[in-house]
Each structure stands twice: as structure tokens, then as C-alpha cells.
Length: 543
Image (tube, rainbow, N blue to C red; front, side, top):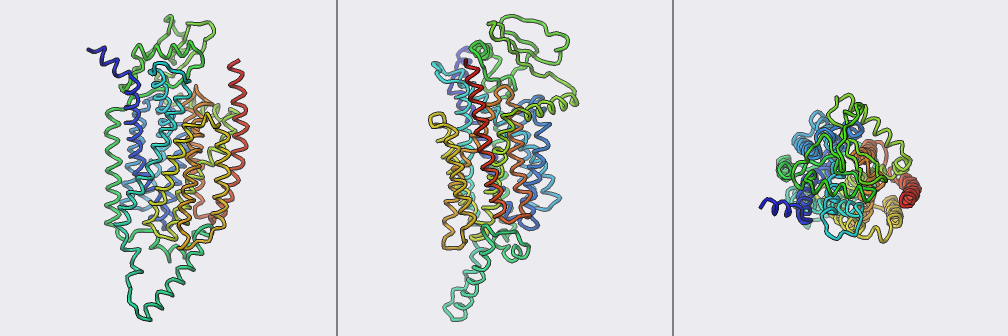
């Protein structure tokens, strides 16, 4: 009976079930956070508290991610790190009950720790489930990299549907706050005086619109005069909303604590030879890599023979393959070491990763992706939506962005190998450039505000390619160093976001757009060089 149960847990369908539990859990946690994040530049616009807290979180993420994230993953495994990360989202959401610098900034610093830890874990989990599914498919005619890319793409497609859910929450929000935006419409008398007042109000409103869009420079006086467009007036209703977000954030954490596997770095090394592939399959057959159970730690394991590690290697676990003379590579994993040794080793690993030529070449494009995302979060929502139509409309635009993001991620993931990654990236460069130019020259008005929906849709389509596409770059370029490469990707993404949030009040929107265009061109050109080098290396390995 037990053998039947073991066989059923090792079916591909069981991998899909566990994968969906993992993805949907993070989906709901991030839905709660993303909705609140998109509102920060509006509901906490005074003194720039909202964007300042987000900037602090990403600065904290950069510092923590460079050193401590790989250590935490090595020491505690992916499951505990994911649970720790999700708890920081709960703390940040709760801090919005009483938004002050001394409540939100400490919570934002903790959130940065969670962000720095969560995203490398996401990359590792996608690799884990992609590899596990590949091992369990009977007549597999695809490479491990194909399935890892497939599961990564599916993750981002599902993940970014959270913005559509944010639109539904926005409908709820609009019903909570609609009264404050309709106050100016309450006087419906047909008297001449009322008609005169309405005309005057319309003229004042049109004058205020000149400070929206590309010419929003966060002038203090303008913000004070139009504060009703950004922040809800009724705190009780805002508390109800935050409580609802906390609820949908807490439930998935409980589920993850029960069912997530504790993946370790052992599971993430993609095989380069047939012998290594057979070795990894043997690990699964021997029960070393379980399905949705905790990963089992071993002190020493060899395929064909058991051999003692030399005295100098007492601090590592060695997994070697002696089946062929051609495959002599070894995977070394650190055992328990003092924290100071781990910090030094992690710093060396990160610096070594940053010294790789391909890594250096994709840094600008990774930073651009972070800057683009924070531009949509902060500048578009404040300058192109809330400034014109009010706080309650933000969620609908975010839903359009999320729908475009999920659609393009799914299509890109399905056809990227047929169409070619570079061709798709080049199309995204053209579309981003066109939308940036439109944002520079568009004249805001209530009559043509619907055009902003198209802007959100286009940015959703392009970021739906940039984010998973760049993430897959790190998986394919650095297959033997996933925990370090994933941390570097997270750090660079958050560098871009931190830059955009930090200078939120320092420059006008049009200046930020010009800077983004510069990063876009430089990043894409350097990516083309890195892709050429990667393909040349791949051809030399096959030969």
C-alpha cells in the first residue's frame, strides 16, 4: 500500500498540484501588498510618506539581499524564508492603520528584508518544480531548461493576475469613497448662480490639470490644493479596507506553513551531461528529493562509490558522479558554519557573480525593469490617474495593467523559443519608446483620460515580457549558482525601484521619462552583447 502511495505522489499531476498551491499562496499575499503599494503615492501623498516608505523598503532590500539572503537560504531552506518574507508583508500592511514616519519606515525596512528574501526563493521554487516535473514526465523530449522556463513563465503569468483582483478591490473601494469625489456634483440647482459656480469650478479644475501628466513636479502648494483627489477623507473606511487586505494576506501563510517543501540548493543544479541527469533522477528514485515533504539533509553521498572527504573539505557536502570518466564535476554545499564565515563567503560569491561579464552586461536592463515598474506604480497612478480622476479610479487602471501583463507573460512563455527572445525584447523596446513619447506630449483632460487605459495596457504588455524574460536570463546564464544569481537579480531590480521612488519629489515626471529612455537603450544594447556571448558559449559546450 505504501509503495502505491509513493508512486502516486511522484506523478507529474502531483507536482502541478503542489506548484499551484505555492503560486496561489504568493499570489494572494502579493495581491494585498500590490493594491496598497499602488495607492501609496496617493493615500499617503503628504510629505511623500508613501513613496518614501517604498524607497526605504527597496534600499533595505538591496543591502540585505547582497549579503544575508543567500545565507538565510543556505541555513534555513526556501520554505522558512518564504514564510519569513510573507510575515513582513503583513507588518507593512498593518502599519498603514496609523501612517506616520515612525510606524511606516520601520515596517518598510522589514518589508525590504522580506522582498530581498522572497524573490530569490521564487526563482529557486520555479527551478525546483520545473526540474521535478521534467523528471516525472515519461517520454520527455524537452530539456530541463525548457521546463524550468515554462514553470517560471506560468508563475509570472499567474502572479500578475493579482492586479486584476486589485481592480475588483478597487470596485469595493470606489463604493467606500465615492461620496468624497461626488461632493462637488451635489449642487444640481438650475439657478443662474449655480450655473456660474459650476463654470468657475470647471475653470479652476482645468487650471489644476496643467500640473498633471508630464508636468507634475510635486509642488507642495498644488498638492495641498488638490489633496482630495489623492487621499480618502474617511479613516474608518480606510481601516476596513486595510483589514480586508490583512485577511487575504494571512490565510495563504497558514497554507504555506503546512504544505510547502523545504527546498535546498541541492535540487537546483541543472545537469550538463547525460551522466549528471541520471544521477539527479537517481536522487528522486532513492527518495532524497521528496515531493511536498521537507528535503532530507545528508552528510555525504556518492553515486558509484562512497569516499571520504579530505580533511580540508570537512565543511562541505560533496555530491559527485563517478559513472563516467567524462563527468568529474562536483557540487559542494556548505554545512553549518559560523556566521562570520558565511558572511565572508557570501560576499565573495556575490562579488564573483558581479564580476562575470554576462552579469555586468545585463545589469542596466535589470535596473531598467525595476525603474519601469516603479514608474507605473508611482508616477502613472499619481500624475496620470489620481491627479485627473481621483483616488478611487486607480484600481481599474491597475487591473488593465495586470491583464496586459498576464497575457503577454503567457504568450511570451509559450512562444519565446519559436519567435526568439531578442526579437520579442526589441518589440518591447519600440513599444516602450512610443508610450514614453506619448506620456511626454499628452495634454491631460477629463475628456481624453480614457487614453491612459491604453498606456497602462501597453506597459503591462511590455513588463509582462521584461520581468519573466530577464528572470529566465539569470536561470539560463548561471544554472549552477541559482541562489546567488537570484539574489543579484532581486537586488538589481530593487535598485531600479529604489531609485525611482527615492527621487519621486526631486524631479518632474518628464525628466524621469528621459532618464528611463536612456536606460532602455543602453540596457537593450548591452543585453544583445550578452546574448551573443551566451550563444557562443552554448555552441562551444555542445561541440
